[in-house]
Length: 87
Image (cartoon, rainbow, N blue to C red; front, top):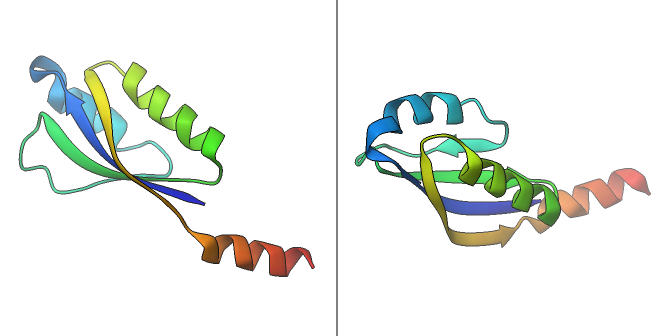
């Protein structure tokens, strides 16, 4: 499992509508919105490919100027529990 800390940089004219639509994306949790143009978020994805696709999808979203990746971490505890279930 990959956990990514993101900053969603939104266009001034579409920040409200963009946030409402983005809030519904699976695996994405928005942080407190202090500046509606720069919104902190956490993305959880099962694989590196899924994480990359999710970030690309966010960047392609209407109202999103770009996405800054601040942190990427690997949750090894999830991998360990998955391996134990497979055994």
